[in-house]
Length: 289
Image 1 (tube, rainbow, N blue to C red):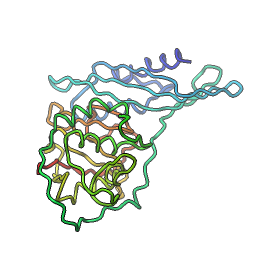
Image 2: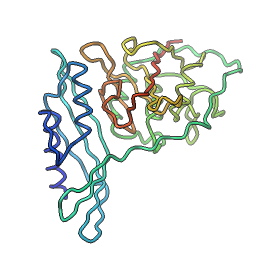
Image 3: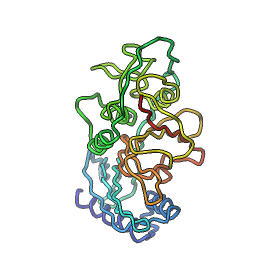
């Protein structure tokens, strides 16, 4: 089965590079990515894909395989070259060795409705700090496709990962032990803002002590180590966060993320299966204190 999957990867890679279409194996992922790149005057000049089987089950002449794919894209934009990477979990079904079904396993979206941030009314001493953007980006690069065992791993890990990056950049924690106040992680406990996408968005929008941020109006205003928040459905509930780790040839952010594990991905996520025309964004630049 490993051989069959690698043959599938190799065939689909050609759709990213050569813009090939085949009715027998129409790959919507390639379609979305190529459309996004055209809008940015960019192209994939080389692509690679490899994967591993997570589970495999047999039933009569059917075989169901859950697998993880790691994609690498060498992207050219004007005279600028950079490497984008991402992983994707998929499930495929074979009948007598022939592929009859293959689809993405979408990560769960955490229910954020019950997790609300309280406006701080206490009088903590203001902590002075300088956000180390280089350390935050280095951490984001180190852990984009794996998990730091020093922290709890969440099923939806995107905000936990972003919080770890901010902490690596020496952003100060505060608010312990109240989970609805501040931004903090302590052993087996953490604030909602540490791990819940909507709560981190709320925290960054209201915090006036400790880790602080300023909302800006456009992505090109962001610097390395800044944060973008995503409301995919446009319903007012934010469900994903990324950290800026690079810029493209036009100065637009490239981002890293967990859950949808990716690095140096274009900030708008138009190539994501989670994208909808109703998507809304919040752009936060971290402020020194």
